[in-house]
Length: 381
Image (cartoon, rainbow, N blue to C red; front, side, top):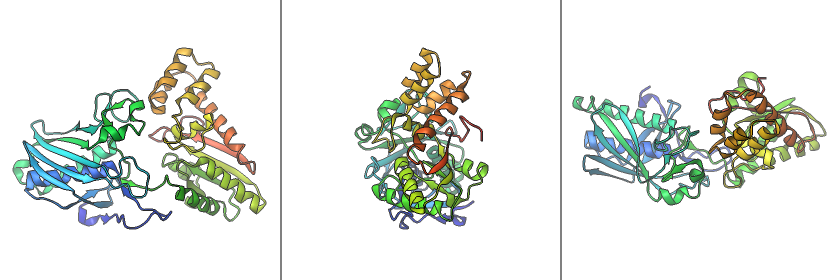
């Protein structure tokens, strides 16, 4: 689909909770790459560039702060705007340095302020720059789009993309990156290219509205999702209408409290409440955590390891789970172990039991856990 056939994503339109959306670090890095390539290949200095979003149907117009020629290539800078989300990288400068290479491929490098993965279990391999798969896909597409406009002699070459962030080393200290084994700076993230303002107190108030809408008309069941993982399960397996699902972000405790209040006010019970998502969020409940934002809680490996120990896993495996740098790494370590699915079923049961205690007006509460690819970890249905 060519740019002319796509629709512009208008950031001036507020999110449903009345807050301003922003640009991910992935979108900013892609815009910087595209602006640098325009100067390198077309001798054009762009004040704004169109970044194709991962959905392929929309593009985002991103202002360019600065673009300059440099020895062997070009460099461009973009100001990170996280909208109304409390984003550690908001206001930072994301930059891209682009040079030709002779291997006819797009290669990624960590510039100043962008980290490098040093431990397994992340979305990128050990030794790779902390640039996640979707932003890499966006940048490759940006390269292809500029090459479509470039002279023929530019077609049979590759490009080295060095992505950095001014003061990224300092910013990264406020994140989980050091604990995750990402050293030297921030990560370049984003799955949609757009920052949804989901982590503010204002969003908590909007969750109450969404909960009441989901429960309306004596709904027999609803599903609460901390993020996008689990959405397909709610839609395809549970056959849940969209209005019966609620994106609760990090605010599981608030969502459950709103549910109990609404049901009591209506003087009724709810047949089934589903919680579906990644254990990186939901398994934090094992440690009594109900606001799962990374700034409010530690990661979930300790709780998972504790359950593994109580289920009789070998001490060395329990220790590996507890010391994993991410829950995803723990999942990878466990996947070939006998009884791994039984462990996740038990975690689902315990999370469900703890959550159910908070909503006694719900007759049955079911938890389903999934990995980052959407694969079921525990119970199948």
